[in-house]
Image (cartoon, rainbow, N blue to C red; front, side):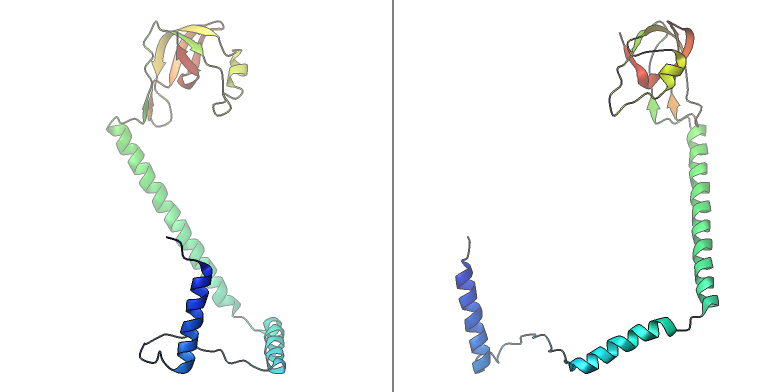
Length: 175
C-alpha cells in the first residue's frame, strides 16, 4: 500500500498545528533542542582563534613517540605469535599426513596440456620447458608438492615430446 505524499504533508501540518495550539501536551514527544546561535562576529573569532592556536600548540613529543613505539611493538608481537601458530599448525598437518588437494594421475595415463584461460595462466613455465598447450605425454610417476606436503601428486613426471620432465598437475587433462 502506497501513501500519497500530499496526505503525509497534510498530516504533518495538522500535527504541527496541534502542537502550537497545545492540544498535544498529553503526549511525551522528544523534540530536538534548539542550538544556541552565536552572533557572526563571535563565531568568526572562535574559528580564527582555533586556526591560530593549531600552529602554536606545544606537543609532548616524547609521549607521542612512546605511544607509537608501543603500537609497533604490540604489532610485532602479534605477527610473531601468528607466525608461530601457523608454523605449529603446518607441522601438525604434516605429521597427521593431511593434505588440501590431492591429484590422481596413475602411471601409464595419457595426459595433455590444457589451453590456458585468462584466469588460469601457466606463466613462462611452459616456454621454459619447451612445451605448448596440446602437447601429450605418458605419466611415469607422481610426487607430492615440496611446499609442506599439503598437495599430493602435484608434480607429475611425464614422458613427453621433450623427454622425461616434471609437469604441474594443474596444467593437465586426461586423454
